[in-house]
Picture 1 (spheres, rainbow, N blue to C red):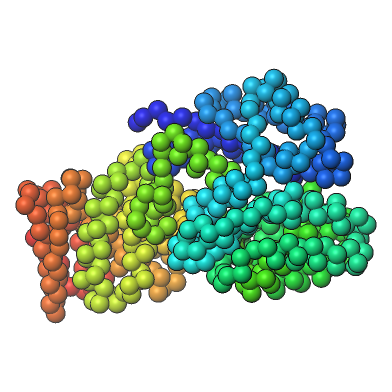
Picture 2: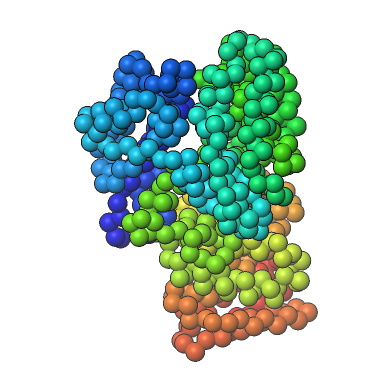
Length: 505
């Protein structure tokens, strides 16, 4: 395996400072360290115009922790960026200079336009927006970066002064705030938004710690599990939350279920910004996810050293690209995975009517095909069990948690025993889903057998179906003795779900 570099990304924002250390891979990366501290540099900058001594000392203490973590992980590429607070701080040069002298770390103060682009890059990595008009917004402490895209192409970007910490210091000077100050803030937000392109927007994707906190609050208020990396928050909830928060003291806001204590004073401004945007574009909710700037910076940094991601190079949808990336993360054999997927698709198309499967079901089979062998990253022995574990504990873009668990189960049964009562994870599904899992796993087992040598010898498949028999003809110009033996050994599940005798030649 090539010796890929370890990269450290430092995001110095108006509210928090974050470190992410990643091991780069050929077509992916693996996070090996994540550190965060809410410093609220913006509280100084937006009230005083500079970073005072006490806050600077706290910043340097955190930079010392971050530097130690970087050294411990032996990161060879370090990229540190400062956003709105450092852009506005009168003594930003001194902070940057001292950081360089004490820790050897260069801080790059990026423009609002650059910040917007990196956030957009992160959204492209996490959401399939190629067929829609999307608005991407990162609501930070000092500014909000907005990108308008059409069919996945960036149309325009804006850096606005709609940062939640900045808005708090400018307008919400009392606790609780006066109604006149809330109206003044709302007018300022709406006036700022008049500069945006007035086009039809299908989807809003938001990043930033405060909006993620709002998403957590919503999920907890609905008693929903928030295991998914992406969360949807309806506009109705945000409007209701605004009406509640506008009359509350900060100490009381801290008691609301899900509120991150250090963000209690900036939840209201963040709500009002995102609600005004939803109102402006007549959108009934937004998606939010963790990552944003850090993810975009990491992708950009990897691109600059010559590494690219499947979503940037493959002419396919984001779900498929992310499956390939996840496979690479666990050092899978990509040619074998693609061959199995191709053979499974041919089998699926010719068997779906007999198996009473729908076209949409292939998405689950495809994911299982691509990922069925990733468990060999842990151990070849019983690797189907390890594949199940890795899939269930990974983020699968475009799939729900239930779908992810189905994919993991289909992959589990690509080898070994057939589904039975001893498999508790399988028994947890409904009868309808268990039936679908068995049918899709039956296809995967045969497709995997037909590439037993991992040399892609079988180029095509022809299936003929009779009353009591299914005949599968594997077309190849090579010696496929191993493939025939393996596929015939794995035909038992297809025979079970169809009630027909299966022959593979």
